[in-house]
Amino acid sequence: MNIWACVANAGTTTFGPDEICDATGSCQESYLCVGTDTDALGNTISRCTQLCDTDAELAGDSPCGLLPNPEICARSAVSGIGFCQESCQPFPRIPGSNYGCSTAGESCFPAVLTEDAPTAPIGICDANAGTVGPFQPCAEDGTIGECADFAVCLDFSDDGSVNPNCNALCAPFEQGNVCGRGATCSAIFPLTGNLAFGICTQEFSAGAIGGRCTAEGTPCEAPGTLCLDTGAGATCVLACREGFNDCANDPGTTCSVGRLNPDVVPVFLGICL
Image 1: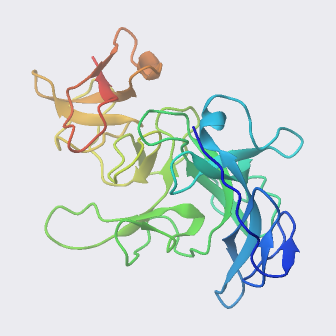
Image 2: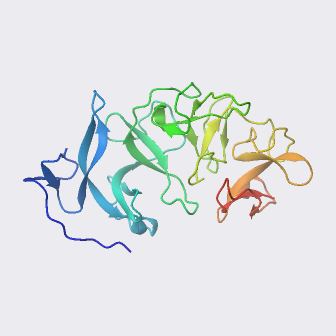
Image 3: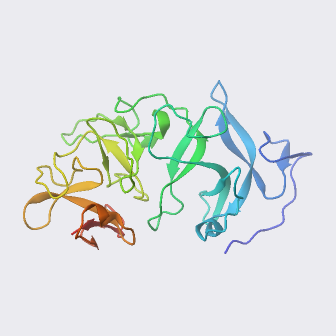
């Protein structure tokens, strides 16, 4: 439960919803001045953004309003408190698209509502200043911002070299994943956080669900699969989230959790056996 407090307004000016704000004044009640955009010189532009209750969003109460301009309560660094932001459809990824976002220069950032349980991916309209295209070299391993379309700069090399590339985010448990020819959607997201979405990678083992593979611990060619030895040699098994119907793509199996390294992946991620 969130507790709200009365505070004195700072400055002499009151800025309205979505208005550009600065240190000379305060936003209206229940709004906070936060950086949301950048100008042509790279300077941050701050606007009055509505605060909201993320617990209410998870409960389906839509604290930011409904159609015709749907917004969602995107969580902030403060537990239980978020900001109302325009929503969008993050998948399938279409490089160069604005995904229906109303503000010029914005793209759709795939996100999740919570980090401690599996939730369906959502999309948040936000400015993306990245310019490096899919699978092109980037500099800062493990970061978002350098790559276009909110892709992640990642290094998959295992030979000691450092060669990060831009890898697009994708939804391994949803239909219509588009990673392009020669790539697949990995269900094992290699960064700390929620595994409701994965990343497009060109580093994978050949093989369909149930087929033999060679590089154990890496994704297989079939989206959402992982090369593992479950007792009869390395095969491509389908990853799954506890409580979801992810094993429907491998008839006759159920989601078995607790078999993957809990130091690497959350306990709710399992494999279809």
